[in-house]
Length: 411
Image (cartoon, rainbow, N blue to C red; front, side):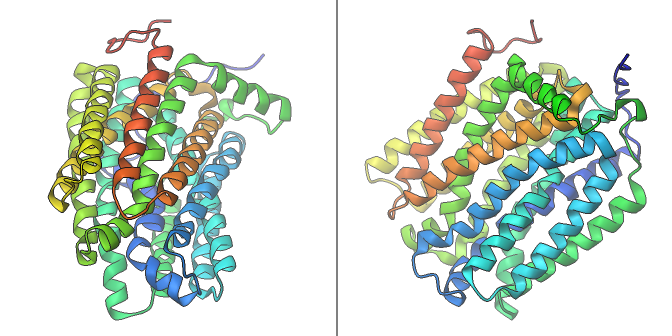
């Protein structure tokens, strides 16, 4: 007879502050691999012979698609061998992929290195969520993820500045080299300080039938599937923004030097809303906060789309409305992730891998469509944000049987 999964006692294996900071550092490595590239895309394209500006977005898209695909690998491995060996091994591959990218002399090798880097860094999402789920549940899990997200959001503020600063003093290759160095530091920290959080009785063999049952359970649980699909839609809008923001600042507003500042403002707004979420979620609940945030995001996106279509878009309207929209995105998705995992404690690794695969891969494909639609204006971006919000709302209405803002999960 299979033993029941050990129930989390909402107690971390390290001091709470260090635990949250380490989780955030792991999550931030993936962000560093995306956001630090943005100022360097023109230099990378020029160096590797890529003429078309939209084609340069593939440096980001290849990483994101790899990150989505990789999550199907790390979850089952983490449930079988534990969180520590899978995380350490994946980070070692990520280190190597950044070294290869720094040495790439052709665009094909660059894209291959980026895809491998995305596959390996996917562990920092899958294994991290499973690790947090090993220790926390429900609103406590949402609080931890929000606090980690606050620290994690420092990276989008700093990463473009990091990339831009390196370009002032050296070549784009050093961005990958410094990312590799940061990865090595996090590997050492994790290996020394983080104990194994998967209880021996919860380890799952790598039997195909068992994996299929875990994936089937993840895809047939109403809350897991519904909130995963809603997250995928919203991530598509986010990745569309990441793909196209460099060209928007360079080509639409002709203010390339403000790219770092604009990106920092939107990231800080997301960090602020997640700080609010960490303080409020235990009292108000995940549904009240996330559903309100989603509806607000849809309204803001509609307003911004009308402004862009009418030809009244300015740098000021873009910064203000983009920042507010991204704040709502942060509130919605951090709680969606916690709700999707609520019934998945006994298969946390496999569940987070399936959820991550759907969310990140689906989001990357949507984001690629949004990014490739760039023709010099912000209209495609806000068609993407509005459409993604409406799709997420429709999915949630089906999931919740037409009732929003419920304080508790009802069968």
